[in-house]
Length: 113
Length: 113
DNA sequence: AAAGATACATAAGAAACCAATGTATTTGAC
DNA sequence: GTCAAATACATTGGTTTCTTATGTATCTTT
Image (cartoon, rainbow over all chains, first blue to last red; front, side, top):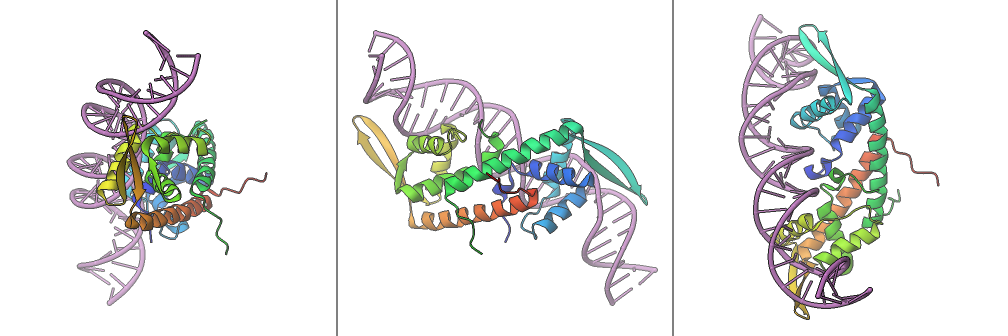
């Protein structure tokens, strides 16, 4: 099973920023794989979604980049800027709040395991 | 406070369907007001978002409609069809699952009130 | 009588993502 | 040692979905 794509909309940026907050620096491909791992394949970020997101974060000054050479191949690392770190906290807590609201709205009871 | 609009994306259809599941039949304006009430103004569905959504649900056979006259004014009620009811269950449980995944991803601890 | 709430709806545009495609290097299996 | 798969960057065209703005009309309250 994996989620219908519309659910990812609006949360992708927050996911990416949170990962960067926890890992100091990551490169694009690494992000897609990490999310895949962490969610047991339920969320698969496509590159067509990821790169525009990273570039827009960079354009907004929320992340900085540095290139590293691995053999002949360039690897582009992304890190949160100070303002990116603040923004990440905001976004994560907004999403947490939103999820509480949705839980109430949808009357979702915690699973009794 | 109200949520940044991108968060609503992808959940609107589910919210509307869940409301219809709980209330048998509702009309458009009523839905916008109910959501506003239930979320203490945090989520405000605009009519420009709602009506296209309702029409698409109708086109997909998930809701049926009936007109009622209140004085001279037409009020259009929407109800879930049998397949709409099934779809609602699917959507709600998918969203619940998604939220669990997001919680884990974002490492959100329950608020200690 | 006027303003605000109720109630339907559409249209143009923006945002955000998906699917497809492209390029190139490195690794692992046989 | 070669070929497929994985790694790693990225862009483009298209679709979906929402926002903002607008339109029409009725009902209620002051």
